Image 1 (cartoon, rainbow, N blue to C red):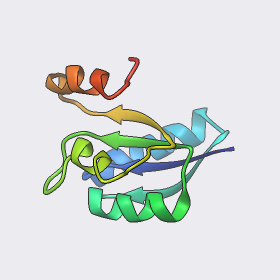
Image 2: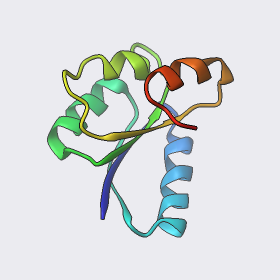
Image 3: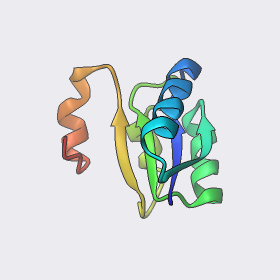
Image 4: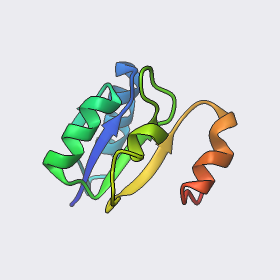
Length: 97
């Protein structure tokens, strides 16, 4: 099982992704759903996920600022954003697609 966390400030986006994962990716276990970066930092430290689904644009602290709070990132990241303006920055953060 791939232990994952969904991080998005919009609850309907979290619910849609969680539904898609349960329907199409039976090997992905969503162990936490976070509506803020602050909540996500605590969930990541507690659950030690293999993978996070990270919304880039969130109020108070965006996804990139959240990642800067970790000395060592030992999980994979799938950026989830509707904004193509973040494409370059996600690639600089080792995104592949």
